[in-house]
Every structure is written in C-alpha cells, then in structure tokens.
Length: 144
Image (tube, rainbow, N blue to C red; front, side, top):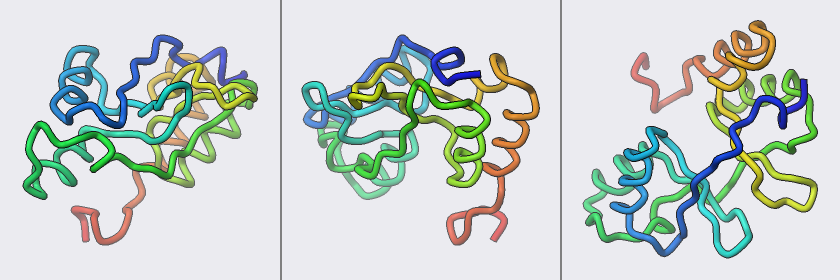
C-alpha cells in the first residue's frame, strides 16, 4: 500500500511566527498532538504538544512566544508514493509517531500517523512501527 492511500489529507499547519497559544488552540480544536510548521509553501518544522510543554512552558516562555522558538527544525518526512511498510519501519527506527507527507516537489500533501497505519495498512505494519516507537529512548525515558 502507498502512503497516499493511508495518509490524512486535511492537514492544518501553523506559521513559525504564530504564538504558541495559537498552535495549542489549533491542536485542541482538531484533537492532534503535532502540527507541521509552514512558511509560505515550505515545510520548515514540526511542533508538538510536548514541544509547547517542555521547550515552552517548562522553559518559562509565555503563551505569546513564537512557534519558531520551540519547534523542531529537523523535519522527518515521507513521500506520498512510498510504500507504507518501508515508512512504518522508518517510523519505528526513528521512534516517530507522525510524519508529514510531501509530494516529489516537497510540497506538503498530508500527514501519516501511526493510527493511519493501524486503520489502513496491514496490521503487522502498525504493530511493528509501534513496537519500535515504544522502545526506551534513553535519558528522557521514564523507565530510566
């Protein structure tokens, strides 16, 4: 199965100069934990609810602080024409639960979440991805 057959197409984005509170509100409104950060037509980062909590609130930043101050700039992504089995293995290896999906011109066209793999792809792919994602991750792990 190809990523474009499993991904969610209706993706909300946030701008790097928007306030953290705006990003949190969008996440709340659409019930997601991560948003792609776009600047014009370019994917420049990802922001998660954890970024807001740890890099934002815990670091003493105000709700008016800007997304670019806490977002992850190193964006992992996949292509819409990749095989979901390959992408699921990468998600497991990199311990990533969601990936922005781009076309071959690197324009954002969707997002692929672990839940998409569980509901659209072969069950084994989602199980394998979850197994890899759930491995203890080092110093930040609560099991350490």
